[in-house]
Image 1 (tube, rainbow, N blue to C red):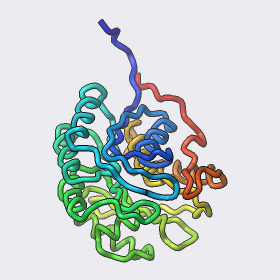
Image 2 (image 1 turned 135 degrees about the vertical axis):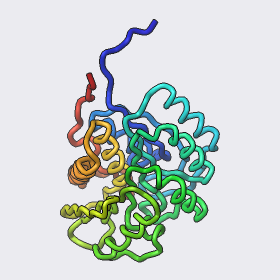
Image 3 (image 1 turned 90 degrees about the vertical axis):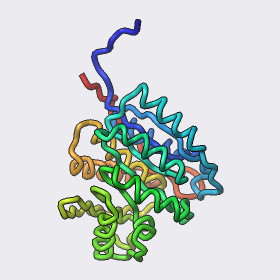
Length: 278
């Protein structure tokens, strides 16, 4: 009989797509979760063929295989937080929603991956509609960038005032909280806005770092939020700490040459020891 252990690790489940170049997707998630001292489990939703230069093609994982992966992981290792990234088809959305409805006590951080860094549209309109209708209500927070916010709102977003308007429109779609990322703004300051269900809006600003090495930034941010929540932090604290982590990861990876396109941030600029819950 297996010995009963006296401790555990904060566990984060990532449900996301593949990135063979290692900077984004499920690989980037696992790096971020691990760098912050948590234990990463994973479920693969899609197989994009991509590198630092862009997405070449996407091969979907059949919904019943996604479901089998989810059940296998959740039957064995209970997550303290769940991060969701690329959900490539309506069938996979359905499977994820049906499964997570059985785990409503677990916080869900959803990074609605709809447009790649290189500008490649990754989802059909019908899948976006399904995500908004069924997945948004389950999410503790969603973390769209400006391109994704434009898809969700039909707006062009060029300023912080535009972000204010877009964030309010996204909140009306039925989610509990929105962190709207302003990394694509043409400005020297990087501004993000966190909208909450009580009508509050918290603004975060960082000096924009001049580097092409921002691949996987959204994956790292959402995974970091999930990790801090898994550690027991409140959502506002997790959002603030995760943005600091990503800013420092970009800063520490800005001059590194990895690949021929948009290189990754440095997930392991200050790796933490595995956290032990006693």
